[in-house]
Length: 481
Image (cartoon, rainbow, N blue to C red):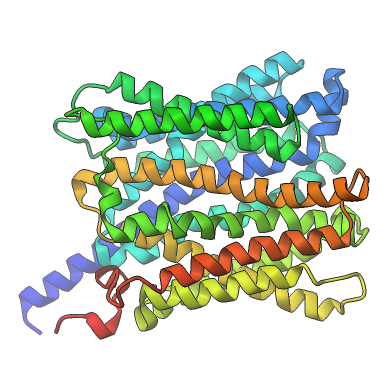
């Protein structure tokens, strides 16, 4: 090997290490953000008692967080380009961490709602800007591992969050569900300052204010409608009205982005098949099925099986173990089979394992339940990582900011859409029986419907070219000699 080749290999190795370090730093912040969104739900009754309000009133804390986040997500890409992604990422962590402190110290519902809104603003910038940082620091050959690292918080936090929240609320107090973010946030800031380089666009252009208002309002109305449908609140007319308003505003925003010279969001990324399929069409349907599962499983074990929250949590930990175990083999599998085969076949396995959960019962042997949950966790992890990586496989440098923002917006919609569909099936089943709570048969239908959505999306991925994303996956069949 020549000196030049040795030097080049050394530079590639150093680049790979830098990309992994940056991705790990971003993942720490993502974990704090997503954990907070799931850990708080278990402590709402205790918080209500502390504030002297009814437990149902506490839902506003979750709603305002979600709506504030929806309003600020469209702005994230432009802010990162204008002021530097590293600086905006640091600001988002600091805002989120500071708001967490004041949420934990809140003495009334009004105070709590105010600081949850601030938390939502910080959260809105964190995910898309963090992903932009990773994309700018990773070569295409390093993208699978980098995306896998920043994907694990989305896979693990929703599973362990309710378990951890229940433990903290039982043995400490609800305040610590927010105060736990303080050391994580401080660690995240220190790591960003130490390891993440600053990168700023030279000419980001002026803020497209009209595009921001239209896109923020459209996303906010869409997510609000889905949130109300999940909670079965507000009545059907209100949900339909808000959904219609969200769709109309989103269409207006789309027309605006195509009409102006310097739009807030560059929609040209949707002309790229790998991006549009993995985020908008099949990707949205696939994420719906995947995101509905962590919502359905705890309810199945507690309402359908009659288990305690601790016993249900032990099953969820097996699901989490499956999510975690797939990480070591994600890159080799994508290299060997390619994105089309992995998304199609693995997606089919994930969808069928979701549907199979609907046929579990209290009489099912625990070993079989554990095996099924482990398989569902494995396939869920693989599908998430493949989707998130393929989305940016063919995205050019000029499209990164808008593509990351669009991806975050669509992921929020798909997450709530999956939960809304699952909740609708459960609520319809309960309503037909004239009961307040779903029974085992209702869960069976919910899992089957969600699984069917996953099957359809998996078959759609098989329409991708065999070489799709080969430069990123390293699919050996299509690598140039």
